[in-house]
Length: 362
Image 1 (cartoon, one colour):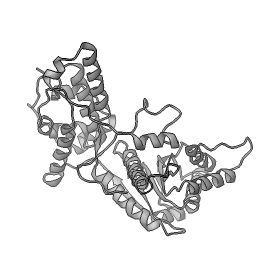
Image 2 (image 1 turned 90 degrees about the horizontal axis):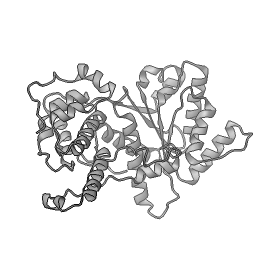
Image 3 (image 1 turned 90 degrees about the vertical axis):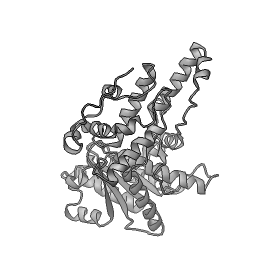
Image 4 (image 1 turned 60 degrees about the vertical axis):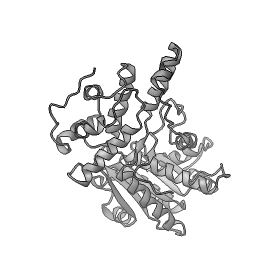
């Protein structure tokens, strides 16, 4: 995997329009489509070029820019950078290990970007592998699954099988599934396994504990690095007891937290993040520096969460095209709803909302 830079972009998770209902990220087809998806910025026409368009062409240009802003690239956050850098090292260290391979767990509250970090880790790794093996289109270096609610060992094994599209006869047992998964993974050279929604494992129940053991067994059978993501996994009993101590001894926990906003480096980094997102807008009348001037307001609205910040800016950009203003203002940002997690974190993490900074839509 390549090291992420401070100014590089990562694409938004593929939309439902791009992935058919039967091809989510948890299938090899959906995952491949996500990895290959790129959000290309459309050309921003000059006033003269715009005036020369027919009504139909103008509508097409607006639609193209709306689609671009709805899929606006995300900037690599510190969490994503740490996840990729740490996993890159672990993949190399695990390559010659036959057991007790090390892995990572991304843990944090809801809405802090855990799934984004996990999926971007997989994408970065797969792109790097493809560069090393450009002619091997059959290679599938990444396997992505989610833990279903109330997961049993058989349900987990079937999630792995579903990624590969494996079919089984009416009568089959879990051993058949696991053996088929391991054989297929070896055939396509899987070396990174991503497991999301880890908090769905209820270790307080016998079934949950057995499902956890199933994951451990798969980790021993598959010559791959495992990366997990879940909500506050430290509080779910994952590291308790004999099983927990073994997990704690093999996995590095990377916390997913809201973006910090302390005076100095943290605040400068937030301003830089906002400025980078602003620089890739495709709006005709937007004045550069408008959003960086609203950095504190944006932090208050988003609670420091990159996904919520992206939603605010993407939503305002789409509205700016629809209302014809072609620029983002604070009034327009106020119209864009944010998620409940961002609303709640405002009171806990964000500074007091700045006053007398409202900008009217001309």
